[in-house]
Length: 278
Image (cartoon, rainbow, N blue to C red; front, side, top):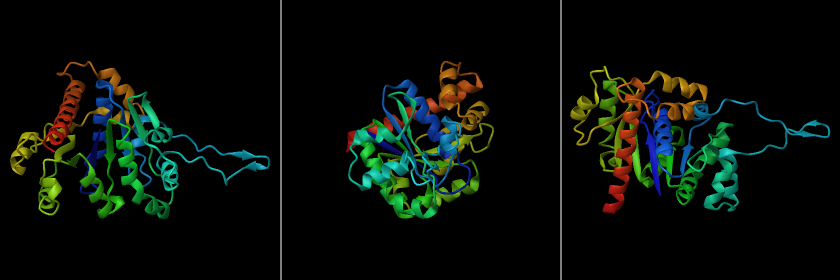
């Protein structure tokens, strides 16, 4: 059972969340594993929009009209409250998730609420991730910098693998190289570099970025794909992967899927290799 943390150093559009969605969804289709996606952001709907259309919150009604004092807690908020009462076994997590593919892919939905409540809740994310690791084959964590540097470092350090997401901007690449001197984990075998929203026509190609950064292994990439990114806004990601899974690799959708497949294979190989060496 393995934890894979997807992380980016800044707020710019590196495609971190959608890259994670692509990798987790593809892996869930092609492998008979139980996968959990955990979002750690503050009121960030990006992950939810990939799989479900937004629905109006249900209001509980009492004898005298709407009852605003009763709320069904779901997702990360409900699970966190249960954990504080020490009533959660690993399998219990599934009660707070939403299913994308039955027995394959589940999502622990985002935090929705006020900043103060988020600040109180975020200290328990690592406990939730550790608990999930005892039940799911893979736990993919979308690590948000809103957690604060200490919690972020803790999650990265306790993960089996870190996927560091960057864009193809030279300033971003240079900033990441500077960070490698301050964050030892980025220099370790536990970290793979991934370019999200990858443009094949950019001069900062996989080959050139690998050479510029002195990476021994090829950098991973999730290419920009119009249909995929539209599906991420239309809650049809699950359908997208089922529809195009057998597409010819010379087709633009096939090229996209071939890179997602390569990323999955590299992640699985690196995790297993690190476990073997341990």
